[in-house]
Amino acid sequence: MNEFYISVTIAYLYSIFLINLRMKLETKQIRFLKILLLVLTIFSVSTFFKYANTLSGWGLYTEILALITLFVFFGATYCNEIKSVYKKISSNKIDTSPRLIDNELAVALIQSVDYLSKRKIGALITVERSIRLTNIIDNALMINADVSKELLTSIFIPSTPLHDGAVIIRDNKILCAKAYFPASDRTDLPMNYGTRHRAAIGISEHSDAFTIVVSEETGRVSVTVDGKMEYNVTKEALNLYLENILKIN
Image (tube, rainbow, N blue to C red; front, side):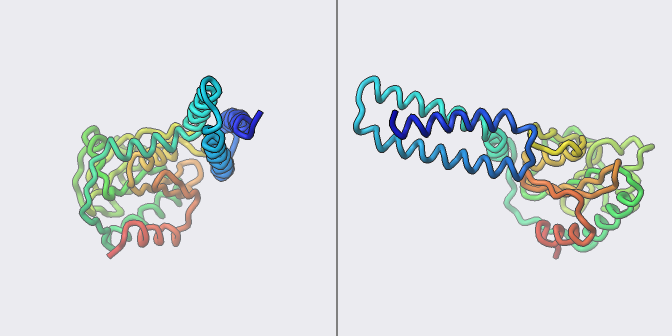
């Protein structure tokens, strides 16, 4: 058995191991293990080209079949990343015009989130960036009003009919409320992530939107962007996100 078959066999076993344990691992562990799988796959491909010239007939066909199977395992392991890239490319209309968030909106967001967090009122607030969320907005309740602390906090009061779902902000206005996002189907998320957290990650996998989550269980604030979540952010950290990602002018 040459180096190719040894490397492919190891990659097979490692892929199966990683897929089976994916639900029990934290995100950072998953990324580290996936990097190892990538290294194994690259090594297998390199050994294939190294020995391909020395083979012919069934020997070459066997190696090609083994390599194809390896890529199937590789795709299964990286399915979430592949789906995320595909959705961003195919299912959204990209508007390349620059979008700036003004200081008044930033202040309203920070004050609203602080108010909701202290009272453990669950909330989901998304600021649209370059990718339009048209399909989701079409099924939400249109508001088209200026952003204010009073309006934002009143929307998420549990006794109001609008509290369920997300608020979407476009061009410094509350465009709609009661918007429902596709929840992330990732299996490596921590158990303490609730419905709002999974929805926030889901919309960040479909677009470049920036989302703020307030947990109704703990009052903790989290943010998502580009498929990643930072859990339990401080008021100061949220302000930095607004400055760096949303480009306060």
